[in-house]
Length: 386
Image (tube, rainbow, N blue to C red):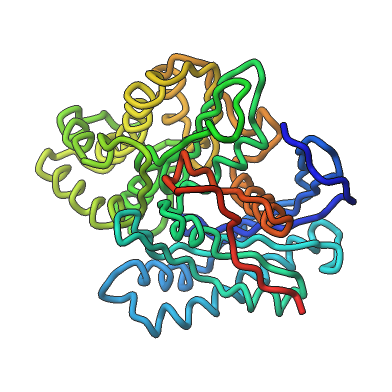
């Protein structure tokens, strides 16, 4: 795929907290000294946030409660939590801190503005992580792409290129986290033609509705069980699909600024007027995730390239309703990350371990065709261990 310098194998650690704010996912990977990129996952785990901490993070998403003092304090508090997650996964892998070459930490996004003036803010102090672990830590991956004129997202197309590129099959790597995003890898592609974009909501709206209907007792629709018990309201689904972001052409990226709690509240108001109830509302929100993905393929991807395989990852790949709908309506084979030996829940943490490795070797790892940046740039800020 590309030549790499000969050197000893490295162990790297990735840390990720996504838009669903479930917890910190940590992964230890080995990148061997081979001319062709490969990586091996040695250990991974998601360390769930305590309920009180999770609620405090959600408060940062609101302009009313996300005050500067709270953001400042939480950045350091999350740095401690991320550092603890790193030390725990190192122990789980039967390793010591000195065995780890570097940590790549995405942090926790609390605001992302893809439109001009573009900006993005991830918290979870890298200095705290480096100090507590004694390991060089790379963070703040989005900022340099934004400085180069990009949207700072999606960040995974380059990693998807390294992990999933094929000479014989065109693939779409579809992540369904809080937000859903896709990387398009035409068969035999070079990195310059890799592209991707956010397709729309993933689990974010569904999770908010589940939390509302269960009074906070459940965080998500496990296995799509609630959605499977309801009927999709086609009129409400049509209204949801008229959301401008869904129709917007790539490059595009989004987050809570469009599909956050305010969107879920509006959906609830429509659902009440239509007397849908819990299961019907969740079924319709789930259908919105599916249809926004399907629309993206038919409108933006298929006209540019044929797709032989779609590879699903993220928490949404555990939702049976979502998987069944996509397998029924996408005109290609639909596989899971697990079919390639990569746990879906670990994928993004693995990605930031890989991105940290690229940063420390001085290699650009953004994908301008996906983010809209003017050029390739080296991502991340480096906080040395000493």
